[in-house]
Image (cartoon, rainbow, N blue to C red; front, side, top):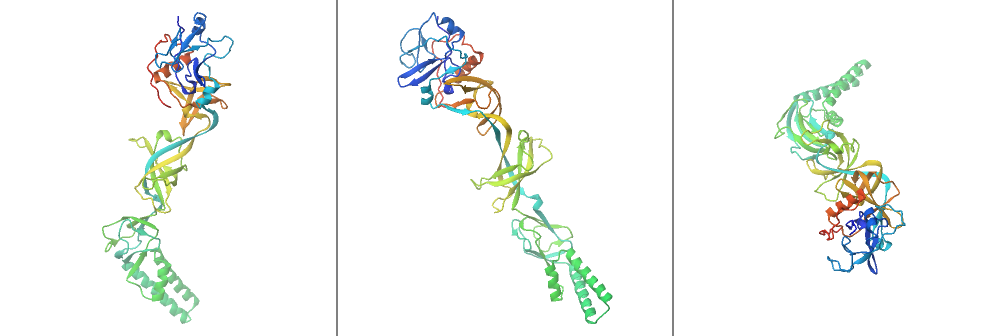
Length: 447
C-alpha cells in the first residue's frame, strides 16, 4: 500500500509551500528533507512501508524499491521515515540551510508604513483663465493703424497695439488744453485765489476723464508739452502674453464700440492642464495636491503643477471628473492644446502593514505568503490583501510587523494547476485523494 504523498511543487523558496518534504542541494548531491510531522495518512502507513524511494528532481515520483527516475533517469534516493518526536505543525516545512544559501532565498521584514499611491492620467493644456486679458476701449473710434494683427504674436505690457482715431478723445484732449491755458492766464494775471482754484478743478476734471479712457500719464504729459491734440491716440497692451483671439479678420479700419473685445491676450507663464480623474481616484486627490507634468515633446523633462479646482460634476459619458492643474511654464516651452501626462504621488494608506508585492502567491481566490520562522522552518499562511502600489502590498489580516516573509527565489515554479492543488491541500491540511505514481506534465516557468 502506497502512502498518499502530496505532489511537491517548487514553490518560491519552499520548493512547495504545500508539500510535506523538500529537496535541498548539498555538495554530495540532492537530498530529500522530510517535513518533520507526517500527515495522518503517512503516519498510518509508515510502519507498513519502511522505505520509500523518490527522485530528487521530481519529488512526486515515489517507488517502493530502488531504481531510476522514469522522467530524468537519476538514481532514486531513500526517503527518511518521519520521526515521531517533533511538535511542528503539519503545514510547516523545514529547509536545509545549504539549500537557502545555494538558492539565494530572499526574505523581507513585515513593516508598518505609508503606502504611496501613484495616480496617472492625461490632460490637455489650456490658457490660464485667470490670466486671460480682454483688450477693449472705453471710447468709440476707428483703428487706423494696427501694430499687432495676428493670433500667436507675443506682446509685452505697454507695447503699442494700435492707433485709434476717436472724435470723442480729440474733443476731450482739446478741452484739457483749453482748461490748462485758462489756468495759466489766470495765474499770470494775478486773479483771485478762488478763481484759480475753480480753474484748477476744471483742469483736474478733464485730466480725470482722459484717465478713465485709459490715456496714460505719459500721454497726458506729452499732450501738455506739445500743446496740440493729436488726431489719433496710441493704445498700449494692458498685459504681457500671447494674442490668442482677435475680433475680425483685419483690425485696421475696424470701428470700436466701448467695451467691445478687440483682442484677447493670454499669459502663458502658467498654463492650466485639464486632467481627467476617475471616480476611484477621487478619494486620493484634492485641491492643492501636487502633480508632475510630462509631455512627449520634451522627454525626460518634468514640470510641477498643483490641482486648483475641480469641475462641479462628473462627466456622464466617461465617469471622470475634470481637474484644472496649474502648471508652471516659466520658459514658455509648453503650449496650449498640447497633450500632457499628469501624475500624482499620494498617500493611499498611512499606517499600513506592508510587504513586497512579489511575496504574495495567488491561488484562485486565496492569497498566501510564506513566513520564515526560526532555524529553517517555513509556514505558508493565508492573508487578506488591501491596496497595492509601487511594488508594495498592504496586508489587512494574517501578518504582523516584525515577521519575515519569503520574497522569491530564482528558480522554477511548477505548473499553475499543481500550485493551486497543492495550495488547496495545504490550506485544508490533507493529502490528495489519489496521488498518482506518474508525475503530472511539467510546465516550468522561470521566475
